[in-house]
Amino acid sequence: MLPLSRFAELHTPFYYYDLDVLNRTLNCVKSLAQARDYRVHYAIKANSNPVILKHIAGSGLGADLVSGGELKVALEAGFDPSKMMFAGVGKTDEEISLALKHHIACFNVESVPELQVIDSLAREMNTIAPVALRVNPDIDAHTHAYITTATAHNKFGIAIEDLPQVVEQTQRLPNLRLMGLHFHLGSQITIMEPFQMLCHRVNELLTYFEDHGVHFTMMDMGGGLGIDYSQPESMAPFEQFFDVFSQNLNLRQGQQLHFELGRALVAQCGSLISRVVFVKENRDKKFVILDAGMTQLIRPALYQAHHKIENLTAKVDDVTDTYDVVGPVCESSDVFAHDEMLPVTHRGDVFAIRSAGAYGESMASHYNMRELPLSQFSR
Ligand SMILES: *Cc1c(COP(=O)(O)O)cnc(C)c1O
Image 1 (cartoon, rainbow, N blue to C red):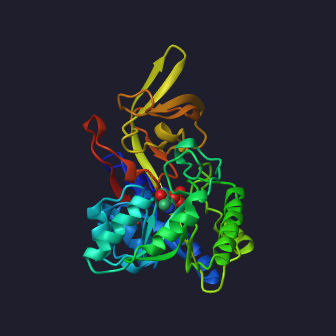
Image 2 (tube, helix red, strand yellow):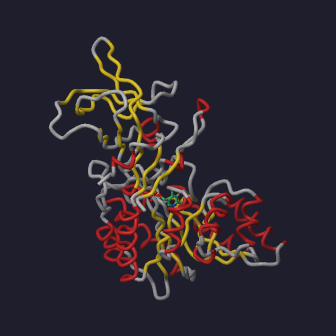
Image 3 (cartoon, rainbow, N blue to C red):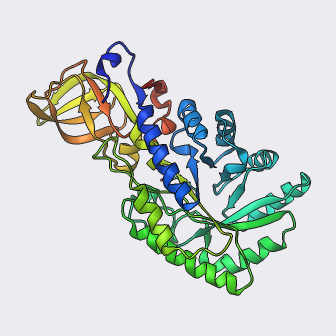
């Protein structure tokens, strides 16, 4: 539970991370993955707080990167470059060179121009770049439009129909080594069907390329496993998720299966702790105005996400009322929840916005010249 007495003297807002919840999650994933010989890479962008990163690196997971900046923080946190994958549609020459210098495990490549640039930079550095091709499998993950990444309409990956030709082009580039294929369906996926469809798509591709004499050593299924935002601290359905792949995917001899999990690893260990600045009444509405806003946690404003909200100061048997819980930022979208039933709330009450460990602190901004959130840890 959240230690309200510890929060009382602290300057708000801040992120509070429960490292027991994090460790429990990491141990669960590690044992399930080890039993199946799967490799798991943590998607750094979900939360790049240095203490969180150190814990995850210490647990032995690899890292999934989307920028040179993430490569730098991952190195500082102690992640092993031989367990780093680098994704992203717009890797700059500088970022590619930095990753080549550190001999990362694999570039997940999203276009032909990118292949050509990685090949020529690797040649200049007299090295061979390991690459996987990010395929757009055209599967609708049934999640929010802004976090679906694998339908034909969005910018990510190489279209399936172009893949045979791109594989040939890759094989002709002398400073690239083609390791395999990479997929990533989107984020906050809470049903297993999209992952099952992905397995079937991958099976078709493996058969096709086997028939054409192409052998892959690595298949990277990406991340996207969702969590239950209505149950703070609950575990993501990792076993169900991994079982989908062990039951549906026909891997060939010598093929290594990789995953890139972000949210499911860190979301439940974090809470955003904030104080009530004012309680305000308009004609037919009551507002709780917090000292945290979309600059600390943008998910509600950006993805219409709902986080569980708790008034930590209130007593269990306090009478309730209905409030819109909002931030102080000058944007109408700076709302954490509409018509939330809460104990009767007063100026100065301490609030927790739960399950905020993923895409919370890492997406914080200075907008309105606000300070970036601080962080506190359970020990
Ligand atoms: C963001 C991202 C992930 C992690 O997604 P989650 O939904 O946090 O699991 C994995 N792979 C790639 C390529 C990504 O961009």
